[in-house]
Length: 389
Image 1 (spheres, rainbow, N blue to C red):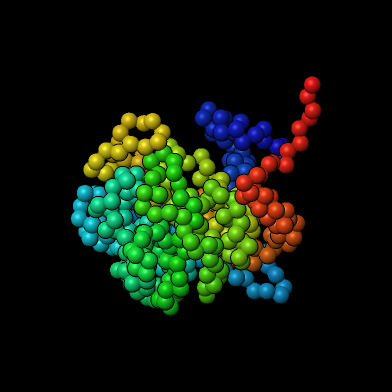
Image 2: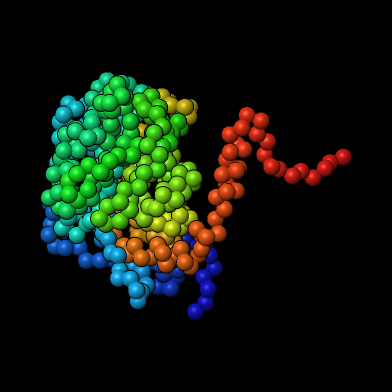
């Protein structure tokens, strides 16, 4: 069959005529890699989603059959949602409404057979960092070990036999009540396995997060669960390739990237980064981003010269799962709440490691030396210049 001209040619042509079946297949292959198989959604899950007005999608990414190992199939889920109540409502009411919303979405995920689910960044609150105000927003912070959100998550994890990743605003009771951007990992037994904190903090546009917390101090933890080795690279950390790499070096098989990012800032990067991380580090990635536009009572300004405004802009959702072979699922909606479930075969990880040999051919000693040199006060790039007259 004839080769297509280019992706750009086809996208332009699509505005003028209907693409042929072959052309459309090639567009999807280039954008998504090998197609993820769309799986049937249980009727009960569809009924819950329809009744509560959120989207459910279920896909599968498999591996080649092996003679010495059975398949290691795991269903992972990523959630995206808008805030439920206005930012001006009482804090307790806002949290309670989001708690109920997540219970409904998690129940639908359970009906689809989910083993591991990750909620979006700071899911119990509006993303108020743009305001730089301390009250009332600091009241959303809670204990990672004993707070009401973790207690609710423990109940759901045990009830549904599901590992739950719950990103919250943490109030560190041990260290003077300081605040962290934290993901709490609760095992399917209902036990808090631990927590990991956001490694990289943005200082761009309206994202003024360093007003509330600084870079995390938990490193690159990997949690060994019944359903595989998981890690959490929170939001802005996806822009740092070495951050992704460290989770792979520590043995992660599934890395979640719970995020809160807006279209004007990052949307062209979104479909690329998680997929690239999955390829470069040979693991699965679940990337989820909130949806909606959150409006705050007071105007705020940012470092990009825009006039004072009361909202971040649109959180564009588009959550998806990427695989180490370069494939990925289609994404969820840009505007609706939803949960995307993907059945993955973890055997694909070793199969791709054997095929591409990225771990065998990497040169960590060279990278480590370059990084060590870079941190020296007298650092000079190893550049070679052609002499000039």
